[in-house]
Image 1: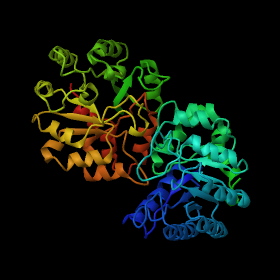
Image 2: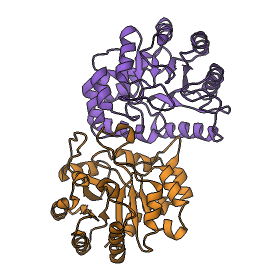
Image 3: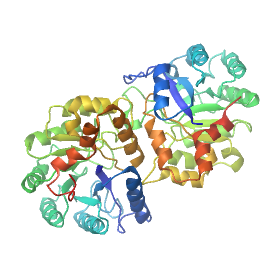
Image 4: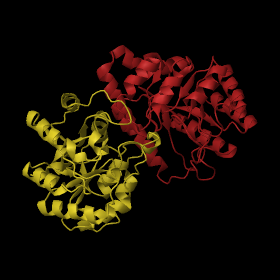
Length: 265
Length: 257
């Protein structure tokens, strides 16, 4: 399995138990069968700049920490996390991170997806041939504190402007109205839906399948591997082994750069 | 024996559900090895008189013995004592009193009367901290989540009250547990459907900090898939005895019989 939505922590972040949390993810991943954790670190996780508005300095420290973690643990791959409000830094960071072996770009909620400031980031993704994982609030009906969140409609607008870039719509189970999201992403062929998030609503997985098919679903866990496992077990029951394999890893292997996952086929 | 202390039948007013009748519930239980479920009426939580579904639940249990009825009691309706007596006579595992959903003052005199009678009868009371993630509420669903202050106040209202709170997260549980005496917190049980496993390990932390004896297996079906509760327990690091207790033993200790 490939977890397309993982996070790790680092010493410069706000958590004193950062190493314990990292180890817990790796251990639980081993038990579940996660071969690859594709992860990001959102700056200092709020310690020295806000989680969803990380400073350039915090992002560089975090991306470096993730590169080190990937080197230490053979089963971690990284997204370069960037803040689009700092265009020059973001583009430099993308070049630097991908050169160091990272395989995608992470956009959190520092600038709405409809804003032109996201265009240079998407262009960089196209030029480098990597996907963009975008944090999404499912049906954002108002501003939420702590983030400039985007919803499915707003991400879809960005995806339409950049049809050659695969966009991963983050955590369909991560809170908010997933029905709204599934209705708007259906026609956007370059938007992939990541199944992560704590939400395990009955009917959600069937509606994901109906909206975008097995071809555009990606397995992930985010901060709750238990709900990730639950969704995998549920899909195991309703899908063929081949279709489950697509969601669990093959769709991810198709949108990340060739060789991103070693010799896995 | 696996007992689901947090199951419902029936429709939900804010979202279409596909599998809400007792046979569907039994099929879902089979998927994750649940032997018995304590079952409330989901639509009745939102009715003016939630007790109107109680007889349906008793009939359901006659047909399907694995489904134990959890009748509702509305403290603001005059017939509450009759419904409580009926529940005791039917030996239901507990009764449902969702003060927040009914719009009843959880610490008011009506609630105090119900709590006193239930406690004297030995009938535990169950209530939901919430039914859905607040971020996905329907715009017209303005029911507040059950607060820690409310739970702390409830358990202090009668020395024999036993309370099962479902859909509680780590923060709520800790604010109640460490805001109560050991004797008070020893009369509160929590279901596991809103506790998270690795990597944050809230469930693991609570089992060690609060005690495995306080937790019961619960799914929140049919709003939530039961595989989630099963996965949480599967990933929990604890002794076999603790796991057996959470799976069903603690519910056996809690339930009225």
